[in-house]
Amino acid sequence: PLIMASNARVSLSGDPRQLGPVIRSPHAIKHGLARSMLTRLIDSGSASVVQLSRSYRAHRSILSLYSERFYGGTLVPCAPATLANRFLNWSRLPNKEHPILFKHVEGAEQRDPDSPSWYNSGEIAVVKDLLENLLGDQALECKESDIGIITPYCKQKKKLEM
Image (cartoon, rainbow, N blue to C red; front, top):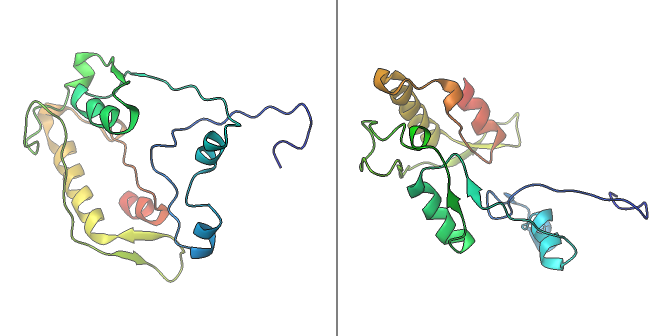
């Protein structure tokens, strides 16, 4: 265990309000593992918590969405306009003032026999289509290194890399 030594200090970094654990085992859920270790420590009162409040990457519209929903409006947008507004002219955006695109995907979670991890072929197809469009738009000058994709499934990540 991390704290067997009497003078041990442990620092955990992360955000318990984002991408919680994906638990399918009823046994694990029954024993509290549907909540992250960080959340359990915070809730127990045994953790000292520091919340970062300035965002230097997100557009104001994106930041305000999760600031209000998860952080009581405490997050402050500090991204330079050249960074935050970079993709406002992308042809797929429904509203040119807000670089947010929500996409409903009909699909089902699947697993390959050689892997315990899941993926959704419908989501993969939609993400690949959006990526090709984004990377192919010469006016945006977007590179692969400018893009981050978050998925809770290792297999989905691997299939997106193919």
